[in-house]
Length: 343
Ligand code: NAI
Ligand code: MG
Image (cartoon, rainbow, N blue to C red):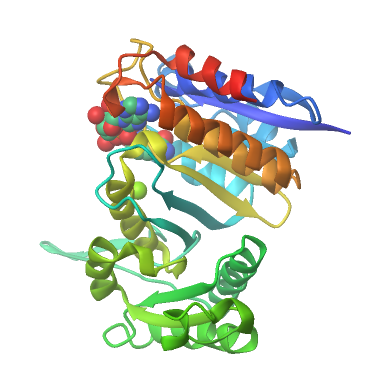
């Protein structure tokens, strides 16, 4: 069976790290891919007036999955519609620290499951009168249930023990009230409340545990004791901010992959952008993009292959070569070649 993968490198270092991920996928002998390339971003907008041409939308819609590098100034005009094209409701953002790297918090292994369609990212904003503007925050029971169910399934499937539901229902009583109520109902069906038993390591025998957390206090706990968290289910904005915060804990943007998951399509992209400050120099760290390709493999059901890719990246991160963002002097292709050799 051949899997059709849409490949959209985009702008800046997207053009450098995306081929690295394709090269790694091509090195996996047990899976057949056909890659179809599409344009998106600043460069194609300058040429055609459109940041996301219809042809590229069609390529992503028809593919089994999409790999996206990064766009520049036009990022919002590219990634938001692309997430819609693949029908993505869940944004999966793992923040893991790797052995041998000098991370702020070397014991971090957290996966953020961020609601990807509503919250404050609805774009429903208006100017009421001069100097007064409003935004409509939308929370639905359906999207809250979908993201909570996805979070608990993800935790179980990937061997995590605990799920935290982030919210601010004490202030946003209606909207986050509904989010919390709905997510907790899912939690009660699938887990037991987190108690001290987790500290004594008995959670695994009783299945998943869960807890709820106010998102502001959670931000502090993530900085101080990230090792206490596994999977965190969040409304849209909270997930965006808490996952970027956690990126800082584990060594920076060059390391963080992500997935935008829908019912029957998905898009995989590094968390970073087009990095104009280093674009064209051949020194971008391809790890985030290659780890995104590992998530793609797992999404298509190739868990073992995904794990191989992750292990290969881990081993190269530990023993080198490393790009300048991690203190080394290697180039993108040196790191990519090393990962392919590991495979
Ligand atoms: P950025 O992620 O592009 O860069 C931030 C810093 O991290 C820079 O110093 C960059 O050199 C470094 N960096 C990022 N990825 C790296 C990698 N793989 N290897 C080594 N160093 C890396 O974010 P910034 O500077 O805020 O935005 C630059 C452009 O990217 C903007 O035009 C923005 O709109 C766009 N952007 C696009 C995104 C997307 O397409 N999903 C996401 C974020 C930003
Ligand atoms: Mg962000």
